[in-house]
Image 1 (cartoon, helix red, strand yellow):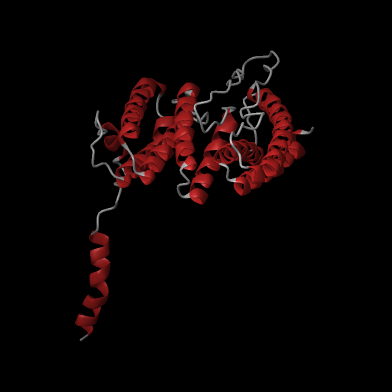
Image 2 (cartoon, rainbow, N blue to C red):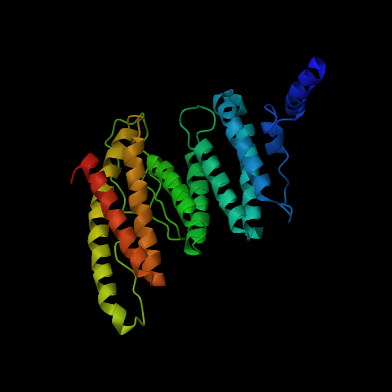
Length: 299
């Protein structure tokens, strides 16, 4: 009887231990090297998530490896980026496109990390962060998984703000502030223009019953965007001076900057789609984040 009881207790434990891990610990490089030149038509979210796991698992090794491995690591990342670009063209499923956007962000995190001496590649970080933003922006305009998507965009925007990369959800390109060299003793370069529309969009053929509300929202947007532009310029001047000394903005300020830009761009989209209540909410949220930025950088 005792033997039967012991077997009954131990059998599930043995079965549990016999299950292989979902991601073998030493397998990250083979996952990245195994990325096909052309994606399969039946690629699933799980496939992209496995690729994301390999990027995160291998980041420490890539950033701390010998400088002689620099080109090999960059070639590996370039192959992954090419694969994601091809996959992006094929993918129609919103969940799959969300996962691709996250993978682009993971590559931006890896390429844009200055904590390791091996893979620091700001140009690659800028490129993949912007691709991620465009994917998220496309999903945003379709109202896909709104709260989860907004959270993803806030994380992405914060990472971009830390590097001074303009955060845009559309193909509108804003000037990228010059990267100050930590070794430079010269004054940091001046901040570029604010990376969001300063004017609200024109909306044609608005019903007479909505015209007063639209004008009120346009004025609110204009006032908030004007204040946000000043806050962004002040913060960017500070960021450039910190970058000249090898430092960066703290995460709290970077997060407020990211949300400020995000909510203004969402408000533009809301005005264009005539969702007035959402536009009002996003303008108010942008104004709140602007005030938070002012508390850190001054007026």
